[in-house]
Amino acid sequence: MRRRLLPLLAVTLFAVPLLAGCGLGGPPEVTFEVAGTEISTGPAQYCDLSLTTCDDDATAPVRIDVPAGTPLRVGVPGDVAEAPWHVVFRYRNAAGEQVDGRSPIFAPDARSEYVLELPQPTDLLLTAEVQQFGPPPQTAESGEITFPVRASWVLTTPALDAA
Image (cartoon, rainbow, N blue to C red; front, side):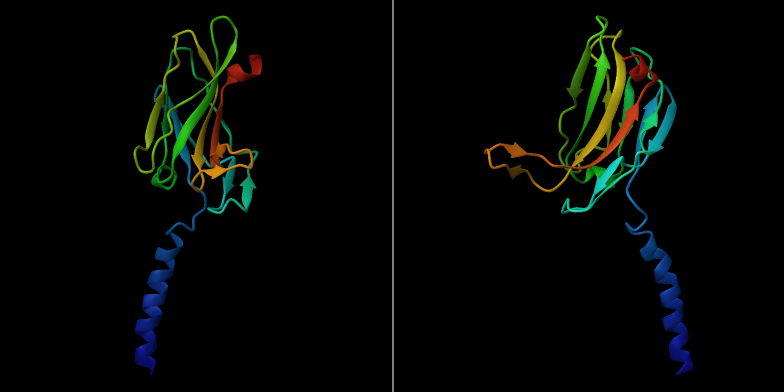
């Protein structure tokens, strides 16, 4: 009996660390990169797959300076790229107007990186937010199709303070 327990115990002790690393480590992180400086963060909002339980983290948004005319590279891990996602952003143009924009919506597993370049070299990025969509689109009572956001990762810039 003793001989049978040792192999079982060894297998159990080996398997537990492996299982702990399989999706149980918490929400994924997104990386923002500007001119060689990278910063990663967890989600500011993260919901389960059914969108019934959501967690908010007010400390998750990151801050980095993005000089005018400098692209912002966004990298997402497979956990984010496996669902549709996009980047929404706000910038200030040379006239001082705030403009909202968004990237295309990327299909599941289509890409894990996006480079945000604003229209004019004088435009100044204020915020950028990666949004991962939840389950397939739903139709509201009004007949409009809605795309629920499951999770979001937020970047702000010092320029936002002056906006």
